[in-house]
Image (cartoon, rainbow, N blue to C red; front, side, top):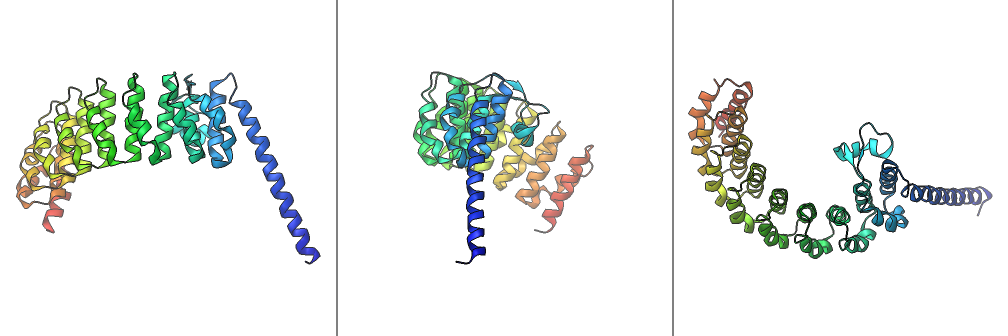
Length: 325
C-alpha cells in the first residue's frame, strides 16, 4: 500500500471515530435535556433524538418514560427542531407527544417498548404509544391496538382508531365498525376515518347506518369514508344526506357521490345545485362533472348564472367535461 493511500485510510478512520464520539456526546446531552424541568426543553430534546433515527436507539427507554409527560407548552414561534417542523402544525404541544414522534422515527427498535407502554396506568402514555405504533406502520401492532379500542379513556380509543387506520389492515374493519357506536363522538369520527383509510367494502353497511349519527362531525367523516371506499351500494344512503341540516355534511356527501361516480347520484346532485349553501352547490357541480352524465347539462347550464363565482366556475368546468364525453 502506498504512503498516500495509508494516510487517506487513517484520516477516514479518524473522522469516523470523531463522528461517532460527537454523536455519543450529543446524545448524552439530549438524554440530560429529556430530564429538564422545562417542558419545552424536554420536547425539543425528544424532537432532536427523533431526527437521529436509528442512531438514537439508546434513548428509547428515556423516551418511553417520557410518553406519560402531558405538560403542555406553547410551541408558537419556537426555533430549533420544533420550529423547523412547525411543531406538527399544533400551537400547543407536550413532551409526551414529541417522545412518541421520536420513537416512531427511531424505527422498529421501538416496537416492543411501545407495546409495553400500552399497559401504562397513565392514559396519556397509552395514547402517545398508540400514536407511535400507528406511525411505525408495523403490522405486529394490530392485535394490541385492537385491544385498545376497549380502553376506559375515550382519547386513547380515539388514538387507537387512528393508528388502526394508519396500519390499513382489513382485519381491523370489524372492530372499527363496532367503534362507530362508541359513546364518544370523537372516537366514532376517528373510526369512520380509519374505515375510509382501510378501504374495506365490508364496512359500507355500517358506515351507511352511521350517516344518521347525532353529531354532524361524525356524519361528515362517514360521508368522506364512503366516498373514499367508492362502493356503489352507498349511493342511496349518501343521496339522502344531501338534505342534512348541516351544510358541511351535505357538501361532503356531494363530494362522495362524485367520487363514487355512479349515475344514481345525478338526480339528487342536480337538486343540490339549488342548495342554500354556495359550498354545497359548488361541490354538487364538481360531482356532476366527475360522474359525467349528460342529463346534468341543463342544470349545470343554469348554474352558470349562480350568484357565486366559484359555483359558476365549477359548473363551467363540469360542462367542459361533459362536452368531451
